Length: 290
Picture: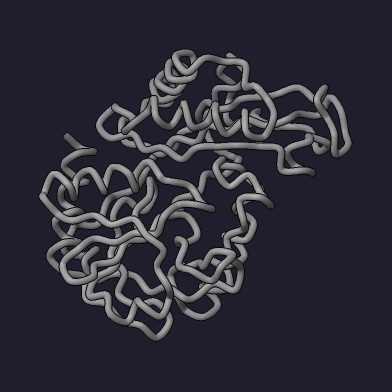
């Protein structure tokens, strides 16, 4: 994520049903979510006062918590209302939105059903967007050392905090190599995703994307696929071997923060951002900004 909020600033964060001053939104050091990663979250974008696909994000947040074995305690309608109230309280129309739910400090230990569940929603201003022409230059990805886990070994269908540890490590390693991000393989050695965005490739004029068997079927991912089908593009979900990528002519990643971002390089492989990528970039921008 390009923009990160800091703890010493003005504003308000919605916390368990009330607006707290930004500086006062603090949790105890013995919160279970900090020690054992019992936390789920969402990344959302507000464009012109409207959160894109808000209900889909909220429902995924609730479902992610259920996968981890806890109930957030609010309905989707209540969470949507709280999200919009937080945006209003902070006076923001174009913003990043971060709801997060976690087990608290009521009980410490691996098992902590009595720890209590908290929900907070923070929003912050999203900076100026680069134009399509600037973004068409593409980004540079390194290959990640870490792999997305088998779904029998981790709750891969949830947007759980613990699943992002290897993403952080991979992105830091990529930065050390001078790259913008990292492309991750799955537990079988097949292409999976970038550290925080889904991957797409163009083969012979068709749009191909890895089947999300051990990583999130992203909301932006599904949106891009729908946009491509509306353009009568052939969309293929399948297992993609890394050795196949030398035949791909275009590549891009898609996610709430990344939107649609062209890729010019993965390791030693080079791609030329082209017409399909640019078309989907423009269509996604039209869909989100009305």
